Amino acid sequence: MSAAEEWSDEEQSLLEQALAQFAGISDVKEKWKAVSKAVGSRNARACAERFKACREVALRLKQQEAEGGQDDGKAAGAEAEAARDKAEREEAEAQAAQEEAEAEVKAEAEAAREAAEAETRDAERQRADAKFEAARKEAKEKDAQEKAVREEAAAQQAKGGNKKAAEKSPANEQKAVVDAGGVEEEVVMDEGQRRAADMRRQIEANREKLRLRDEEEAKKKAKKAAQDEEAAKAAQAAKKAAEAKLAKDKKALEEAKAAKAQVPGSGPAGSKGTGKGSGPAGYGSQAAVAGKGATSTQPAGKGGLAGKGGSATSQPVAEPKAPTKPSASSPEYKGWGQKPAAASGPSPAAGPKAAAGPKAGAGPKAAAPQAPQGPVPDSWDD
Image (cartoon, rainbow, N blue to C red; front, side, top):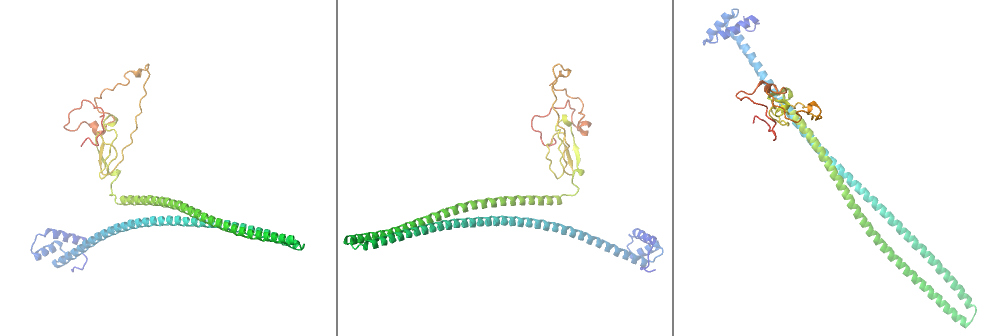
C-alpha cells in the first residue's frame, strides 16, 4: 500500500497509538518497524509517509491560525486608526464651522454698518441739497423783487423827468436836474445795497455750509462710534456662542471617546459587595459602594459596602419622619424624649455579616455605641 491511499479511522488511530508507544526507540528503522507491526495493515515506509503528511497538514493549520491572528490584530489596529481619524476629522470640522460662523457674523456686522453709513450719508446729502435749493430759490425771488422795484422807480423817474423838461423853466430845469441827479444817486445807492445784500447772503450761506459740514462730521463720528460698539458687541456674542458650541462638541467627543475606551465587562452586573452594615441604627446608614476602577461619590462609614468589578449606585434610603409629640394626657407621653436602652442583640436592620457576629479575634460588644458627632471618615477599615 502506498502513502497516497486512504487511511481509515482505525488505521489512523493505531498509527497515533503506536507513535506514542514507541516514541522512546532511538533507532529510526526499528521504531518504524515496530509502528508498522502495531498498525498491521501498513508497512514501515507507508507509516513514515503518513506521519510526514500529517505533520505537514498540522504545520499548515498552525501557520494559518497564526496568520489569522495577525489579520485580526491588523483589523483591530485599522479600526482604532479609523476611529482616531474620524475623531480628528470631526474636531477639524467643528473648528472650521466655528471659524466660518465667526467670519459670517463679522461680515454681516460689517455689511450692516456700511449700509447704515450709506443711508446716513444719503439722507444728510438730501437735506443739504434741499436746504441749498431753498436758499437759492429764496435769493432768486428776492433778486427778482428788487429788480422789479428798481425798474418801477426808474420808470417813474423817467416819467417825472420828461414832464418837468416840458415846462421849459430854468428853475424847473434846475429842479429836474437836481431831481434827476437825486434819482440817479438813489439808483446807484440801490445797486450798492443790492451788492451788499448779495455779499451778506453769500457770507451767511458759507457760514451755513460750514455749520452743516461740522454737524455732519459730528454725526458721522457719533454714528460710527455707535456702530463700532454694536459690531463689537455682536462679535463678542458670536464668539461666546461659538465657544459654547465648541465646548459642547468637545464634551460630546470626549464622552464618545470615553464610552469607546471603556473596558468591556465593567458595570453594576459585575460588582461584588463585601462589608458589614448595621442599618439605620448603626454607623454609616448610607452605604458607600466603591467599584474597581471607579471612585464613589457617596460617604462611606462603618457598615458601608466595598465592591469590586465596576461602579454601582447606592440603594435609595427613605428619609425618617420626625415623630409628633403626644399630649400630656396620652399614655404614650411617659418616657417621651428619653433615650432608648441599648439593645442586647444585633439590629434587625443589620446586614448579613453584622448579624453573623463580630470579626474573628474581636472581643464581645457591650452595646451598640452612639453615632459619632464629628465627620464620618471615608472608611473604618483605613
